[in-house]
Length: 204
Length: 204
Image (cartoon, each protein chain N blue to C red):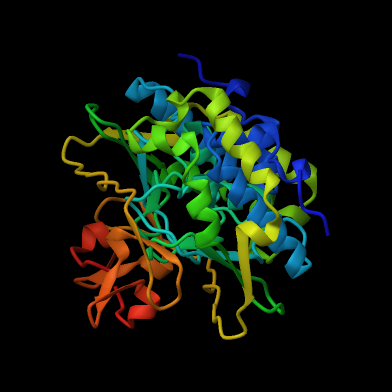
């Protein structure tokens, strides 16, 4: 399969609006997410089946990858379908009921070449993405599209990957401390009364 | 301020495409996010200043609120600007450098009335949101727009709310185990070699 000039793997315009700026990592995550859906043989998630467990963390760049994955797959943080392990790695695991889980990562060899682009010189000087000249960001995105999927991504089947979606309950209680609702899984007992975690004084 | 029929607080069409279905909680989160931006006096976040710490958790409904907040504020999970405390509460704290943090929650009195709508009968029977008849979801969204901001939301200033964005570093190492890159904050040492957390065998 010729994977060059895959403009079909560019996110729609609204994806950039959602994300807030035009960096190359959101589009890379979008591409990863699209490839993952194809490999799993599933549609973009409307409800709550697909789960994506990202291996990224905090306090490092390139986390924007995860917005692209949310956008492509529909496995959004708000639907509780995306989480991260805090491992500081540019990889994500895709889990779907009845399918073999898969893991995508950005290859180190790709990242080495990618990091030479002008976009990263701006970022390392501390320039926020929205302040980088638009052609510089566009050039970085275009460059990624010239690289084949095999150049950019490594993918592995993860038969060993275990994930159990949490059971869901609609039951909730009014916290006797603050008077706010708390779902039952997070309700705690203090002196025989239902309270939320912050009112309980417990840590968890 | 007359807050009835606030169709200006409806998310754009692409927001529903991002989210994947037409439930009333994504739009409520969007509205909460818009109100929070106004109260903080800040624009939608293009880069990395605004942080939203949600009080929701897993395994309960109505987390879709968080997608609406991402969409309205630009404080996305992918930009590492949104996290959750796992408290199972329908509330979110909005933090911006130099501003007094604020907390929004859905009032219990609002949730009591809201829960009587037909949409929730479907959900409690286990119907996934995308399978609920479209007019039922639309009626639930329309009903929320008829409620004033004061009926729906409680908001408080949180001078006591402390948040420290993590320091960011572009430095990374190649893991001597798997050969993948890992950002330095998450790099561990095993037998004097740099490794990533999963290769280290350490838990954190």
